[in-house]
Length: 163
Image (cartoon, rainbow, N blue to C red; front, side, top):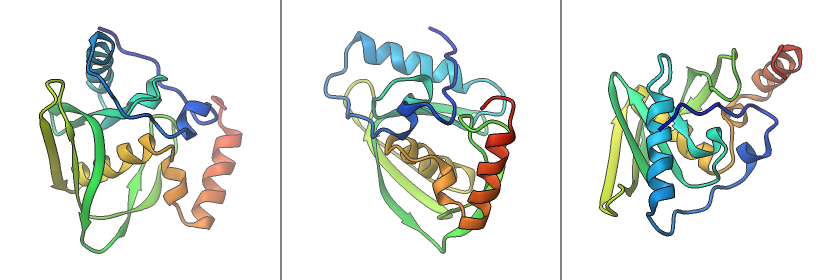
């Protein structure tokens, strides 16, 4: 379908809790195509529906060339010792800060046929699963920063040319 523009910090859709997908119809299929097209661009590990202006629970991912999507994802399980790991966000362009994430994560949702879909893994996949489900809950990664890192990030945002 189309590569959609990414909404940036300050857009209310990024802080609203996304609604569950109740019915899979042509609109949801088009959303998935747009999410997949949008995440395929270089340097993108994931795109959540709110980042393209849609308040529904869906995201796409692109981890080491493995591209896919999930509808109505729920972060079902995390494990390991949470650690600070470098992270950025398309909706907060140009910033890179250490966010606290678990090293392993599991998300459960469904595909376009309504079948259960389970995504689980470690490393970048675990980080992306947590990051994208946060988006669907109206949370940007900035909330996962330490208070000092958040102050620095907010200063960087205020001084950015896109804000």
